[in-house]
Length: 250
Image (cartoon, rainbow, N blue to C red; front, side, top):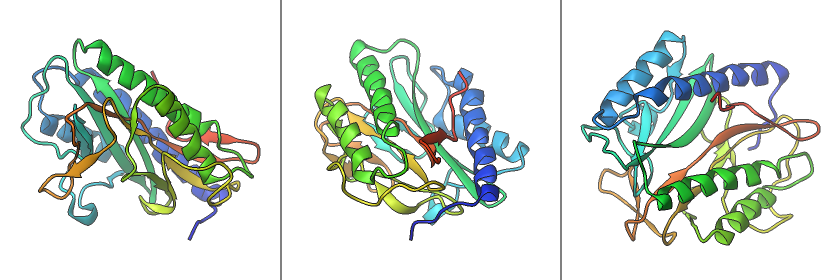
């Protein structure tokens, strides 16, 4: 069931979303060669708790960590461990923070040191695909309009669109209705209404779109070993358009 948030709920989600933005800003200087993904996870968990909020991913359906840390060919749900970041890596940090029962969610892909032009291209155009989707958010449009915009932009730039994973509604729960795919047909799917809050999150690959699930039942990688990037915002449908609840602060 798709829920319409009240003004009180939206205000709590603004606060949760801003905490997500501040956490991304906080962790960015630590993303350097030599640090482990587990160390990044601990830094972020401490930041979240100090800000009177909850690391919502930790324990969600058994997930063991605060962050998803997805490096290079990992698309999503990379579990923090003792892997040391290397110069030339890219890493997606995805986090959900709960504040007084309401959630904020955003993912961003970061460079580690100097990365090659292919990785820069992938990151640039995955981020731009996100904003192409967000542009479609306004009352009366449909979920299919968002997916179509993301898919069209990605395929025009020869990037693979992962279809097994999608965005989602968000509120009291991390994942609510509706699903928000990164592909679709215009003027199809649920209609957007003021007060809906959704997460739009293109997951694109530099190679083919096909992925597989690792034995840990969380980590999703590209089948062909190509790099992947992932950008996500929590977005409120307003009376005349949209509001990004997880704004970039840099």
